[in-house]
Image (cartoon, rainbow, N blue to C red; front, side, top):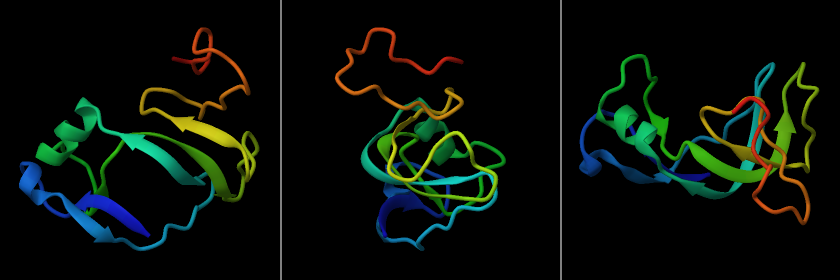
Length: 109
């Protein structure tokens, strides 16, 4: 797959766009076919050197897409569902069809 990622911490110059290994969801994980992604300050902190992050790291912590696959034990989403990924929201949010943004946030956010 193609991705924007970095394999060392630093400024914007460490960002690379290119081929990245295709992920496979493990137990309790979901693989999302990302249709839109954006950066927020968490991405800047991680790129600059937030401790504990494994490298290489794909940047873009906010995303929307479609569940492509689910690992063992995943019961709350299914392949084909639309989801929204936000680092402070859990569980993954499923947008409602034809809904406005009012009242459309994850229940734990």
